[in-house]
Length: 335
Ligand code: HEC
Ligand code: HEC
Ligand code: HEC
Image (cartoon, rainbow, N blue to C red; front, side, top):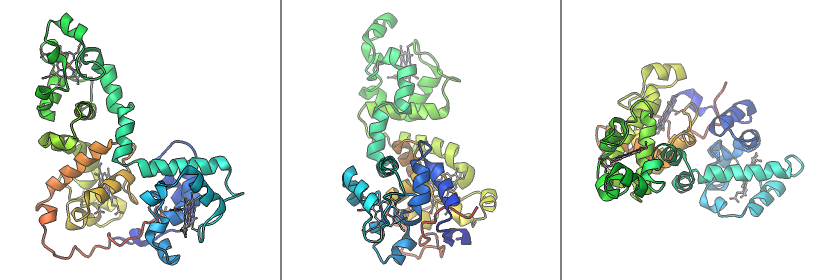
């Protein structure tokens, strides 16, 4: 890939801080992390590979968001940052206790921005829950099971208002979205009132309320993935996933760098693709604040579906000599 990927601009704190500021915008922790920690631990906190080499350590030793690190208590982590540990510098006197505590909380956020933590966040009132409660719960109940009083008022069976029973959830996302946009008998039409993104979020929220895993939604899931992909990813990666020439030029990258359906990309595990999408890399923006974990899963499933041949079945052939794989976790890029 282009030289940009390979130039690790160590210690260029402005670049690092910028990168930090891009993925989280709350509090100072991201920029403190960017300027004080990312050079060694990577902007995604997974460890900077070239630093691991330099320190002659396993990359995992620099990974701050793996299980081994996250299993430690806040107290232990704060102690390591305050007092240092082997090659890990001492930050006592350089950062206040509050700054260190905020950093640890920030790291937990980075480490926890994985499906589980996201799901909890969502059940606690993520965008799906908020939308549902403000637009739908008055008739369908907070739990999606339908409000009896409304059923009486509309003179329909309570089941007609239940959105998380089998007959409803057996429908495809497209059907549920159609009913929501066009309405149905007494069900008001939401066309023009909800964006296609809102609708996708609502449907995935309904599936979640129903206890259904998004996977079970099958084709429907794929459809949400397609919509999200077209709305959020196609501008750079192209409708077909092969990358947009104009964007590649703008980013001064090989077109292949934007190709998400080539072997180099599709040979990655779902988890790797998930993390790349959530955290971003170099010029690729991170989506962890913008998409729910299920949405990222859906987009990835969709990307796999765009592949000419199922990636897993691909022959043992060498991936294109592309360098993308070995590129170190660059800390931002040169300005
Ligand atoms: C100069 C490079 C460098 C910088 C800068 C740096 N670290 Fe480290 N850090 C290390 C190394 C090396 C280790 C591994 C120590 C060991 O296990 O031998 C480490 C380990 C850690 C650990 C323990 C991980 C574990 O699994 O036990 C934490 C927590 C940590 N660093 C947090 C931070 C934070 C927060 C910052 C920014 C304030 C930071 N580090 C800045 C090099 C660095
Ligand atoms: C003013 C009350 C009201 C509101 C608000 C409302 N609905 Fe409905 N909804 C209904 C009624 C009544 C029905 C049953 C229609 C029928 O089957 O005759 C229904 C049916 C549905 C169905 C079809 C269920 C099935 O089994 O086919 C879906 C899907 C649905 N609503 C989704 C939503 C969503 C999503 C929202 C929020 C954006 C929403 N509704 C807001 C009254 C409402
Ligand atoms: C503003 C442009 C832009 C948008 C929008 C964008 N990306 Fe990217 N993406 C990039 C760039 C640039 C790279 C290459 C980064 C690099 O290698 O330096 C990339 C790389 C990737 C990779 C890594 C490919 C590989 O083989 O390593 C994945 C996966 C990816 N993007 C997924 C997505 C998904 C999913 C979306 C939508 C949710 C998305 N991207 C939206 C610019 C974008």
